[in-house]
Image (cartoon, rainbow, N blue to C red):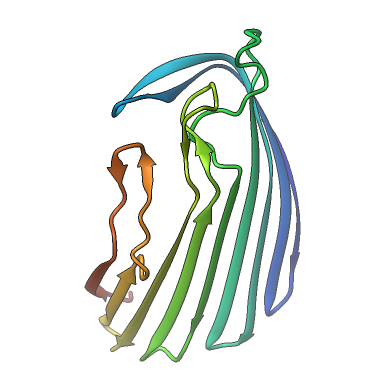
Length: 186
């Protein structure tokens, strides 16, 4: 395994770009075998390489934005010509995350986006889970000092996007959460 990154930081921003490479022997991964079954499979040799980029910007103490992207290229290095150089199951090629937040301590809002590309579910690259994008939003209010109380209301999957992590196992639809957290400062 090897990785390298370049990072640039200022008082109001952060930017980083990094690359990585992994070489695996006897990697165990799960493959889809329809209907609704997955079983482990041993990849004799595989490689995973990629690029990660992150950025954060704080133009004002009450406003912040973050952005992250990952490019992942996986390869089956098994000598069997049917699977040689095909992508590994359950490893999407692209992932993107973004978040914007703002407001004073007593009322902070945020919007998040999480997206990923389609991904194969077996070594033959015949079964595919489609890509997906989720949008989440929330507001929080913090008050008090000792202890500090934070009340949060969050809406996950705002647009009720339908997606699966495994064929036949859907991810939750739109949902709302209300939390109250207490933190003692010592």
